[in-house]
Length: 279
Image 1 (tube, helix red, strand yellow):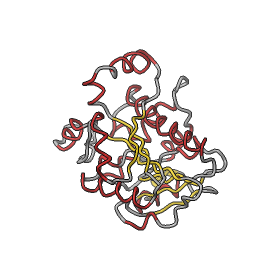
Image 2 (cartoon, helix red, strand yellow; image 1 turned 90 degrees about the vertical axis):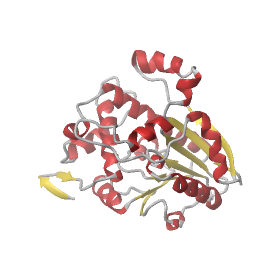
Image 3 (cartoon, helix red, strand yellow; image 1 turned 120 degrees about the vertical axis):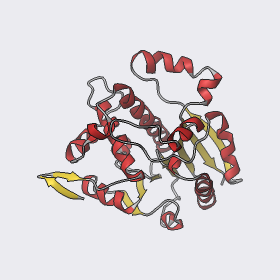
Image 4 (spheres, one colour; image 1 turned 60 degrees about the vertical axis):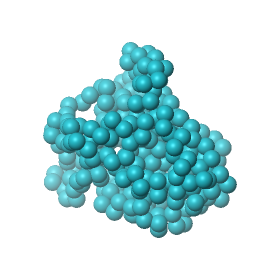
């Protein structure tokens, strides 16, 4: 990373790490709105601090994509808050967190937060979102066993994997879920997934925006198949659907909730899932 203008940082990211800029951009698009569904001024601040051609790469601001991204983030926020209601001094291990600002949105003043991400991403995060008290950054791949070292489970643990697993190969996803269930009995995990049709489209390279083609997404699972996640390890005791919060406007406020009552639409949608590992 180098400064191309005073006080602005140019991120030197490519491949999967670059996707963190897409999610940040659209979260900021939504956060800028006076009627935003998410309170995330830090996302706006981060976009303004980066020397990156967001609109050239990802297209002009889209209210639809912005709200969709924000609602996904809110569904994770709600699960973290639910966990903290039961375990106010617990630990959240955020895998592949990128430039997510969730800690600032859900911090109860007591939670301990561990960010696990690739070294180049952690370097950028340290520049823009330096560690705060009760935060720790781990520069490692989630496919390496060492990231689990030193994570405190004594006061409860929730693992999050937002916008991560779709970029892993199916055996890697299974291996990660198995490792978490084996290493952290009694913990919970929240993850999201793209449906199979979306994964297939990404592998064909047809998911293009203005000047950007996202990386392939080798792993996809339809929402009505989520029960198969139990097959990764016998200690996966619960698999639960996490509904997106109701949003703003006709589509996200009325049409989408009605569509999700239809079996096909409900199955073929992007999904958020909560797991519980037996103690």
